[in-house]
Amino acid sequence: MRIKAALAIALSGAALMLAACDKSGDTPAGVASLAPNTGASSDASGAVGEDGPVTDASGAAAGAAVASTLDMGALTERRDPERLLRYYVSAIRVGDWANGARAWSLDAEMTPAKLEAEFGGKAGPKLAVGKGDMEGAAGSLYYEAPLVVDFGDGRPSKRGTIVLRRVNDVPGASGEQLNWRIERTSTLTK
Image 1 (cartoon, one colour):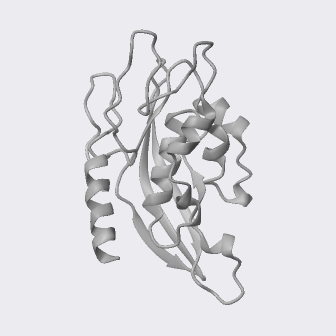
Image 2: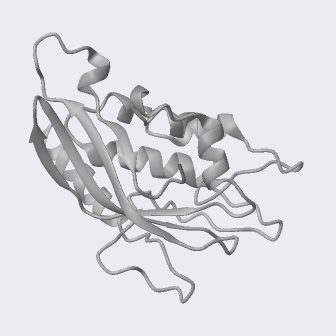
């Protein structure tokens, strides 16, 4: 199990090299994307493989193919909050609003429509998440990390934080409460 964890950390480190860029193409200092870089590239039609929106000939999202590339096990993650962040970043990057909304806590009342209104557009957004800090408080664990959202369609970049929460193994907690979920982010429009 330790070898598996070490390999996952090593692969995550390699994935952190893909970072959100500002208009000059520079990576914001200390902020790296948690999204995996699969090396897919854009073709002449503008459709992008696993690094961006996946579309068919009519321009419709290829949802089933996209969902199969997401780490669905991240939704039951109890140890590594960054795993849920990687899942969320990947879902948003490819425009999978329904699965992106699943990363949020029920209390946040996040919907696929809200995510699409925030991140949708002709060019998929690039989310970059930096290394966060974990804190415990009143039976809960919180993980807060810096977040940068860059849009490819000319909208201004957003910088802020994203906060994940889970119940800290208290007696009587449900399985859902024990899993990491996004509680809030300062980058979403209210």
